[in-house]
Length: 315
Length: 315
Image (cartoon, rainbow over all chains, first blue to last red; front, top):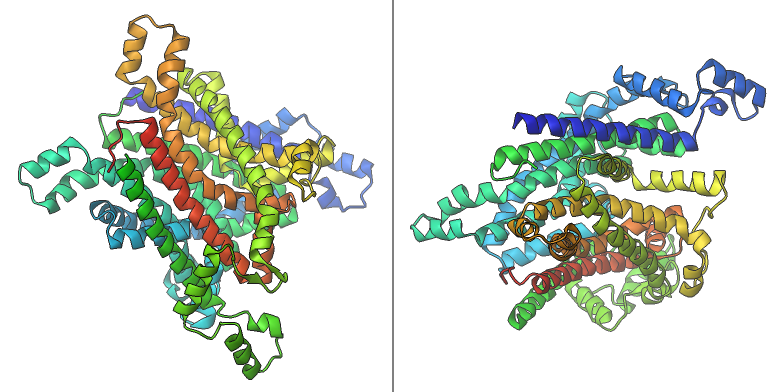
């Protein structure tokens, strides 16, 4: 097990290293230097060259990559010349908001998906299963911003139950307490994640129900409640672990549309604004963090899976 | 088998009815009648009521739902009062364009993902595996429009190899022949789909490689090439069937961003414009078709899986 962990950790490091090279080179090709932004569009080529030389943007790509990575390892993600703030500060102010929105929605979705999926599997092809499947497919097929806009129209504009935008407070505690403004975004994101997760949970539970050990548990006269609780749930949960690990980066990117629609000042809205401003240092850092989260999510899911299910070969 | 197919189709039809009720109900709450759009913002309440009476928007929701479904079954998806055209005509002009873009990208990704995933599984933890994994994670974590914008900047604006927008022709034959304009969108979408597929294929191939029948095939002295071709590929491809089936609707909505960025006149761009115009009949039809495709993709994947793998229980 220890050898497996070390090997997987080392492979992940190599992959993160490769990702950082690709991301840096890709964005460097598009945006080699912020000189034009700092000096203005009318700056002479000589002034641009002088500025580049002074600030280290005339070095070869490899040297610049090295300097960037050196900074990243010291928690310095570059400087946004558009917003006149360091990227690390911009991210430091916002990541907790995004983590709160994603985290609560993901946790809620998992907590609902597990019993819902099992219910659908046990009572499959019943009216309840049909209704739940219809709702899940409607959410799954609906583009997310359409759902957000419908929710805003119905619950905020027509019936004035919730706020039409997310909390605008700059204190995380206030944001958490502000259910009036946060219910809509959280409920919508939960619904969208739940639509996918409940399907996976349903099919995992159906597969597990067909296993011999369930038949054995029933044959020995175990009450159905205990068959489900002791034998079904724990086995059917295994595929969910991988799914959750793979969803972590997608949540970051999925938040983007929710944060933009609900005007919530998290990382997603920052990315959206930066895309409009061509603020590449922010885009680079966001993509890099997203990729690192993908690798980390994968790694954590694989390790959790081997812990949860000792039958899995450490290949 | 026949009984299974009939039962699955029956369930799918019930789910489709459920989906149509939810989608219609949801959009009906937001947008009960197009009278305002037709008569203008200054129309009197009386005039609106009269118009609603004349055009069947005064009946109960159930009556209106019934009329809509009756229309859909006769190929009439309602009328876009903003664009002054029937939704069916709007979709007819565009669906081939979207199908070409999605279809080509999907086929290309599947064709690349299968050998790539097997290569990565056989040579796992080598340099080749790590480089492709890094590339896949970078593409997987990068928000799709950022990839499109980088591709446009590099391949269309910096090096004028390809065009900065997709083909503007309305004729599919012309669009297919126009490789200079279609290469960028197709390649970008293929990369994004491939990023996910190659990971699934890699892990499916790794699971298959650990099976006893592979060990037996090797032990009886079968050349490695034949072990891979005869025993590995066919078994490792089984999970891909479900994945491709589930990807069909997300390709439709994934197209949306690609079509907007590359200004390609397909269903995605139509949906995007309709969202801005609050053209609800189009939004309703798009969501409904997306949901139908989800159900169909699921159904076809399940049936294809039972055909490909007779071990699967017809539950």
